[in-house]
Length: 502
Image (cartoon, rainbow, N blue to C red; front, side, top):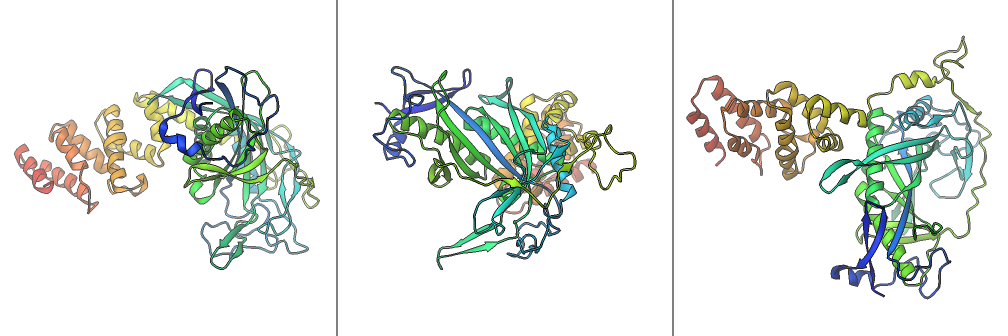
């Protein structure tokens, strides 16, 4: 049987099979971990004769670290890259007799996130103990919200690109099953040289929001776009910095495949994906691996897998065939969490002792979807340009600051920023926040072009300066400005540019 190649067909959201490109044939000819060759799968997994369509189902569990100065149940500070075990309270270390004290800021952050994701916020929620053993979990259990979480039944809308452009017809919605508060575990540091594992408890007890998304997605592109939209929402709310490189946003993906119209297949879980790009790659690889396994008569195991970034594939970690008993039980040291709205708020209630859902709702900031619509209406830019402005950290603020000081049309400004300016930053390996070119300088350059003091090619040549001193661009813009203010003739300005750009 020819090896399958997968294509995510946007119209029906099915994976179609065809002949695989020659360059991948050798890689997939190797035995794939996680499957058992020679064994027939269940009837729901057996490929039907003559069919070449598979449907993939993807659900996500996302852990977002709450932006708070202290941990969820203790007063220990939360600081990235602090010296190991320097931010650990007696409670974090699970010393006997210590008790949890709930962090109000974490509760408000969860409520705000739930409202932004169209969730129903429960006025009463409960805390539970989830028992399992890891060396970096000193208590032997995690305090979470299993039975009755703080928010349920929400939704998140996101827009996919069609080709190189954004299209309103590609807007999809994923259901949010629940949002729950829980504490993070510590961190294990493996020293291969000395064959030992060290434990850092700085992260133990840090407040997390777990956002559970229903399996409404079909491929890595969808999942990555949904997570990126959630990341933008969390940052707009200020409830999480959602920096994946610092572990502030971690994703677990549940993936299965089946033939359309048949029961869902056995799912696998890919754990701890810490990059949006790797998230998409891991999901697409796992979908392809499962289809190939079934096509070859194998069986999909209910297991936990990890994504190997160097090899670009998922690898088996542990099986989940035997359901793990977490021995959930009510947390005896925490009473039910009671929230209020304007109608149920007690008359004599101390505002510092209660959380008012309506008060938080009234203070929700502008969400990314609203911001994109406002940008299109205010500046007349294309919808895909509004997505680009928000997707690059700091770019929207840069664009708005340029617009405040330039006479150039918004369409010209956005063109310069998305092509010339971002191209310059890419050449210099800089983020927008690290740009040596200020919004004022770029606005000044665009004003000179708009006034026809300098030509468009000359302005582009100014922006093309690279290799070496990052201050050259600002220097050139300043020289042109001074020459213009001194009423120098165009020939003099051209001479200045040619001399400095040699």
